[in-house]
Length: 131
Length: 327
Image (cartoon, rainbow over all chains, first blue to last red; front, side, top):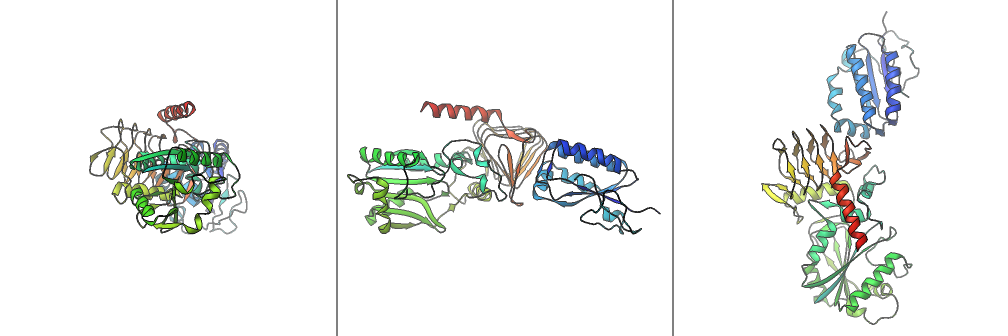
């Protein structure tokens, strides 16, 4: 039986070129299933530059290619200001939300394991990608 | 009557047009600090120029401008203040004014904005026959005082010590008109909105090309730009194709707003480049930082493709420093 699985991307405090490369690399390995559910947690972000934003765009592209869902789990005021400045906030809104996709998905705020699926067959376990 | 004015610039001694945004601050208190506030253009002219222009309305006035040390916090130097560069400059400025025959000394610090009428303040001071009169607004002192220069002439010891003896018998001039403390970016934004709406005496410097829209000399707007007044676009600024300027926004001098960018309910400070296709909303933008007014957060932006300094601003700053060295 397929386990609904949400991938949690916890974006670090400083999100630049190096962190974006790491995100791309790890996300590529994680997006194995069709229609992946991805949650981007931007709540820790204090500084994000253009390469970081490009990293998020790449993530969006990958999710879109597989017809997945994507939503922001949390957002810091700094990240919100940058997304608004670059109009990327509108791009996030174009994705279907994880909840809308699967009403039985349970989102756990803090991930407990890297890639472990949720213990219950109905619950989704967010998985960290970027530390 | 000859007035000797001493204009002190609060804060740091070095003039640096980028310094007003130099330290990270969540609430934006670092956004408007020091001498930078005096040199910060607001609707086309900075507070120092506006203040000295008001002083020149007196029939006879000489003006000396000095920069305070960061430790200075009040208009009147403390009796026991140690001899810093600022104190030396202040004592020297008083002495020079007295030598030149000033009958009244007007002391002011540039920092906040008020519509206070200096003539009315002087009239009050003279009518009361006061030695020292300080101006107060609803929230406290307005960093403006008048001193009867005759009371300082021929005195022994530093002038700051003599002046401190007048404080106990000072007159207070209460002003209940427009005052803006300019402590935070939100205050700056309010002042711009009030100036554009005519709610205070801060006049935009430029031609009013349509109701509520002021354009400074040499500003270039592409015909496709949508400007919805009130709005201000300062001298020498350039707004490219497809941009929109709305919601009482101000773009100060020597700025460049690049293709397709929207500026709404925001202030773009002098010499700022704003990149292509951006959405500047409810923000104050400086060459390397953006302060979001609603989120009350300051964001450092190091990528000049987003926000940076225009070439024009660099040139004019270099010219200003050149003039300063010559003086």
